[in-house]
Every structure is written in C-alpha cells, then in structure tokens.
Amino acid sequence: MFAKAFRVKSNTAIKGSDRRKLRADVAAVFPTLGTDQVSELVPGKEELNIVKLYAHRGDAVTVYVSGGNPILFELEKNLYPTVYTLWSYPDLLPTFTTWPLVLEKLVGGADLMLPGLVVPPAGLPQVQKGDLCAVALVGNRAPVAVGVASMSTAEMLTSGLKGRGFSVLHTYQDHLWRSGDKSSPPSIAPLALDAPDLSEGKGCVKADTALEGDMRQLTLEEEEEEEEEVQRRCEKSPSEAMEDPGPEGLHVDPTDSKTLQEQMDELLQRCFLHALKCCVRKADLPLLTSTLLGSHMFSCCPEGRQLDIKKSSYKKLSKFLQHMQQEQIIQVQELSKGVESIVAVDWKHPRITSFVIPEPSLTSQTIQEGSRGQPYHPPDIKPLYCVPASMTLLFQESGHKKGSVLEGSEVRTVVINYAKKNNLVDADNKNLVNLDPILCDCILEKDEQHTVRKLPWDSLLSRCLERLQPAYQVTFPGQEPTVKKGRVCPIEITLAQRASNKKVTVVRNLEAYGLDPCSVAATLQLRCQASTTVTAAPGLKDSLQVQIQGNQIHHLGRLLLAPCEIQREKDKHINALRHTHSPLQENYKCLKYT
Image (cartoon, rainbow, N blue to C red; front, side, top):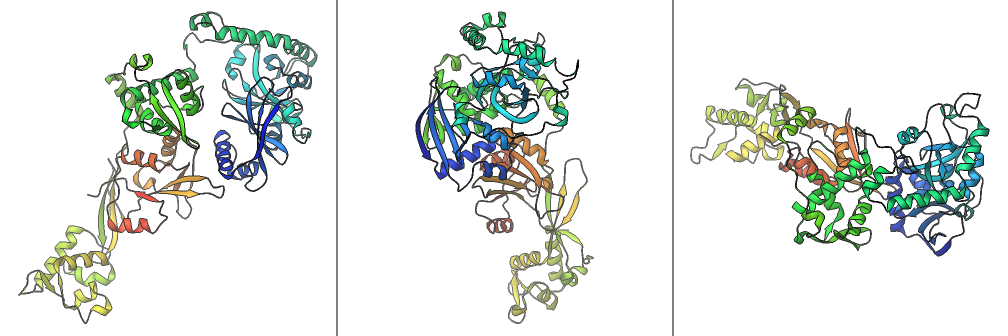
C-alpha cells in the first residue's frame, strides 16, 4: 500500500476527545495490551498528530504520528500498527517468519506467498482468514511487515503451503516507514521453540531451493495475474465460484460446507433480519446501533447459539451495518459525534419480506436445555434477627438467650407477650405500652430514659427490631438453608473512571447469590461486545469482581433483572447505604425477600 509515495491531505494535532477514542479503539483491537501499555502507546499529554493521506492507489488512510514516528494507521475503519509500534511490542500480533531476501519483494509491493514461509519446530501460529498478522525475518523476531491472512492456518497446511498467504499492507523501508525517523529494526532474539532448524532434512526445506521458489512466486507479474484471477472470481456467481477453487487453493470440507466464520455471518444476518421484522418499529427510529444489537439482535439469537460479531468476517457491528446499508435495507447516520443510529428501514425490502421467522423445535430445545444443565434460580433470602447481650433480659422469659436467631414475626410475638404478661398495656389507650425498666434499657436512648414513659405499639416494635443484630437465612434450590450474621450484601454495579479517562463497569458480590463471575463475564462479553476481566475484589476475602469496558449498567440491569430473576432492592436501609456510594453506583439483589 505504501510501496509508492503518498499524498498528504492534512496534518493536525489530535483533540482530547479523539485521543480518548483512539485509546479505547486500541484497547479493543489489541486486548493483549495492558492499560499502562495503551497509555504509553497513545500518550496523554505528549504531541500526537492525525495525518490524513491518499495512497498511490487512491485509498484514504488516517495515520497517527507520535514523537515523529507513525505508530498506527486506519484504513476502512480498521486500525493497524506500524513496524515502529511492533518493534516496541513484538508480541502484539501473531508473527510468521520468512527469509531476508523476500523482504525486497515485499517492499516493492508484493504479497507474501506461502512457499516463502519458514515453518518453525513449534508449527505456524494459529490464525483465521482476515486476522491481522506480522512478518519477521529468520534470526530476528522484530517484525518487518504487517498484513492480513488470506486463509486460516489449517487451510495453509491443507494447501501444502501454496498460494497467497498474506496481503501485505505496510513494510519496513516503505514510504510510511520513511515518514518517520527511518530507524532500523532492533535485534530481538527468536523464541527457543520458534527458531528454525536449518540442518539438512530438518525443519524447513534447504534455503537455496526454497528461496528460488519464493523468488519465482513473488514476482510482481505473477502477483498481478493473481489479482486479476481474484477479481474474476469475485464477479462469478456463487455456484461458479464453488466449482472453480481458484489460485488460492480454497478448501471445502465435504462434511461441513461452511466454516465457523461463514456460520457466524449467516447467524448475524439472521438475527438482524429477525430483529427488523419482529422487534423494530417505525416509531423506534432513530435507533442506536448499540441498542439494535444489545436489545433486539441478541434476543433473536436461536436457543443454544451465541452471537459473536468478532468471529464473523465483519469483525465490527459498524462494518456489518455498512454492508446492510449498501444493500439498501437500512440507512445509518452519525447523529452525534461518534454515535451511529439507524434512521430508516426498508421493511418492503425482499430480504425482510422473504425472511421466515424460525419456529424452535421442542425436541431440540429439550436437548439443549439438558446439555446446559439446570437453569439458574435465585436463592430465597429471609431476614433474621440475632439477640444481643443488651436485650437478653427482654427475651429470656420466652426461652431465648444471647445469640438466638429469630424471624421478625417471632420478635413481634415475644414483645407482645412480654407486654401483656407484665400488664404494660395502657388501660386508657390500648395502642400505647407503658415502659418498665427492662424495656427502657433495651429500646430507649440514654437521654430518653427519664422523659419517655409510653410508646405506641408500632414504635415499640420498630425500635426493638433496630436494636437487634441483623442476620439472614440463604436457601439455594436443592440445598439446606444457611444462616449468616450481618446484612445481606447486594450485587454492586459501579461505574468507575480510570486514569486513562476510560470508563469501566465493575460488578461485585455475585457469588453471594450463586452466580459464577466467569460465566457472567462471558455472557456480558457477548452481549456488550466489550472486553471483560475477572479479578480479585479488593478488600473482600475470597471474592471476585467482573470488570467490563465502558458504561454497561443498562446491559447488566437487563441481564440481572430478567434472565437471573433479579429484583431491585426495596429495603430502605439498603437504599440508604447505596446513596452513600458514588451517585453512578447501582445496587441490585438476586432475590425477593420472603
């Protein structure tokens, strides 16, 4: 792409909002980078420029320049690292190895052919078609090229390492590299398992014969012929394309005619059409694209299957919707900066009108439910009260002692019986109770003991419950009840902002309600299409917390309130505790008090 000189359209300093968006995009595209590494790659205060240019073939490219070197470039809304970045993070991408003489052809604009690969003893890295990859030279792990895999690793091996392996986008010594400080690749020793064995008859074929074949494969004339062949195949009908496998050596498994990526593409389109036909109405427009995915498309996914855009050929929702817009099914506009919405839907489009809403099979549902095991049911939690030492005299007449655990109704019965047995009910007003020394010591404050002589029944009972120590009983389905002291800890959903100005949603106390944090994280990753991590909860012993990138409180609320049968906590004391935290925090409880 940068084999020839490009034309610069503009060169401007990046805005703060664009810098934060770039950080978020880098963290999403390259999940192996930690927060500190993302901040190092996209610095917060150092100079960072956006260069918009046109490549020699007319492609519009956005280049991000830091410290005088291009660090990233964006093409068709896809983000790619430059060799300068890969030299700092050599393990950022799956790396394939080739011979030094091949680099000259790559710099000249050729793609990397499979015969030019050096197969290490550990085998080739595992990639899928369309994955971003790096290319390094024998003896040095520092990448010298960035490209996209033309086929999966399995297809490479099936083809006998013949045909086009990678579409090369950028190389060391091309014009993009020349726009930087023109430094040479650092010397990074290969991993022990990746070092090729060049001895006779081991590892790769002998260098001289392999290179001769590589040079023949990498001539620009043959590259142009293959491009013409690819263009010819793209213009064919699907049936003709299946009959003609083409020069890339496409392999079709007779037992499974569709790859995982093709199946995900089909599922994505199915959920999209299902959502438009059944869920979205004209009154809903304009509709946020994120709402279409999270609230409608996921709910239209067939039972037992999971929708994951990252495993499709589109990789991103925006790219898929752009394809649907090209088919004139929908119209997408950016109504606010960085936020896309669907503003129009052609419900008379043949693809929508011809779509048949699938009816799930009862047999398949039974099998799927059996394979998943028992569905989640929230536990029953019953509030209890524990007798403290200061109230022992009040409860000992009923046979209770310090530490006894009672239900609210039992506490009420004890107090009523005590008042009646000791003739404390006021003779003139049955709604009042005269306080004897024991009741005064148990429920009155020190400054009230010489002024308050009577209390209404409701005030007496509420004061008594407040003085008792809180406890609760947890009963999971199929298990014996467990009594625990203290208050019920609700599920805490907190929206936090990290030092990099990136928002994250943190969820705690899932285990208290029988929810597996790892399972919740996996579900949220698919629903929110955002990265999730499970870490130890600070300050809590043997407890885990789930962290999701971005503000995902809405998605969490839908997950916890519907599938998990969660209800919002109504207890006023819990709500009071909630408001002492950050105003962005919300608490949920996995059950309804009985």
